[in-house]
Image (cartoon, rainbow, N blue to C red; front, side):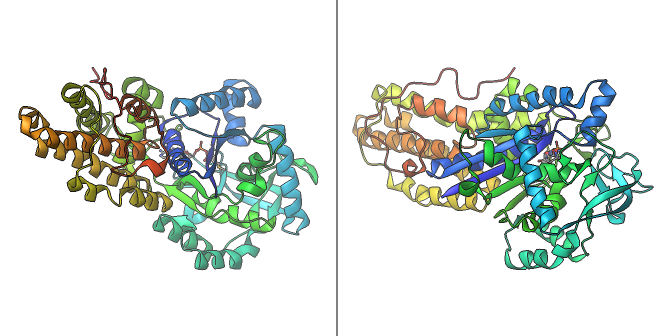
Length: 507
Ligand code: ME8
């Protein structure tokens, strides 16, 4: 089965921050898990390079939009390997191939009769690149997201007949209960639709930095139309000499933050319907990562507010996997939540170092000390088997439901169970009693096997650490999910101890 997962394409008007890393890692966990299941996966991310936000930021810096786009797109491209994102392609909307395909697709929308010319007047936020409705505006015509004054814009524009998709979208939300997750976001999108859809402006006349409207060269497409279409355009040129559209479209899961819900949950399906294309199967919408401001109040992390946690700094200090783990542990994926260096440090020490890291270190150290580094070939302990019996299936089901935090939680319960098992069995005592040799064999074998299973399951969350640990455990079978069954470890694997530990003390 094909599994196509996307992230939003990020604006290049400033540098990447933890919010961008967060979405990307969320999509990456799903992509990696599906690869473990042997699915044919395509994972797309990229940058959104047109429109006012970029044009204005470039103007401030006194450089061309293309120069700014190239400079910042590179920083986003560098972010991907740095957060260990296993994206199959990185799309840039300034790519000529993207532009041509946007023109083709939009021409189809035009030919199908969903576009007309009209006069537009509205309150516009140049940072969101969005006209705000009365309900969406802050006091005195301000943007509630960027806290800046909105601009009253009047111009002749091409319009997209969004209003004619009122019924099809209502039907979509009636029949496809999991089109948007979590439920709260589904309800928000549905109530936006039932509030009545108005046609939206599709082009801009006084902007050059964009994709030219093929039927009117005086206009470029409003950046959101150009941007949304990346999810389709990229498939046609991501792989040389191949068009993946038929294999990969419709997307299986599209991941994004709640700030861009309306565009994805309302405009996007309408646009696809207008072009006669299939709709994505699911939109997975997560909340905001917040940080405390000077007064201790939680506010959204954002480039324009300047309160960003630099993912590069965090990763330099704690490692990439620690960041990946923390993101889904600290904040339930889907909800808003605060992050801070304090809670980061706490989770690193109490969970990563003391629970998983320590379990790994002591398991390997005991096998080395008591059994010359060879995992005893005996049956695994039935006492533990019950705790692991349904684990892999549970994790798969949770990740099918895109419950990234819950899946991690059920794995972590087993990490804790294994630590309790060490305490219950006290191998150091068994080692002193020659009559307990068989009991010690069973204990060590069970620990090695349990550790192997949780490590396979944790692989999508912490790819580097788990690879290192599997090597140290002498496991050669890789990370296929079919191997994540307790009691099936290869007998007599030779282990090596971990030095340094998986999560060393951070000064
Ligand atoms: O909106 N918490 O780009 P963008 C969690 N180009 N996630 C956050 C976040 C935060 N504080 N800040 C950013 C755009 N994000 C458009 C998208 S798609 C066709 C076009 C993440 O650079 C989150 O995924 O502003 C959010 O939706 C996205 O970055 C916005 O990135």
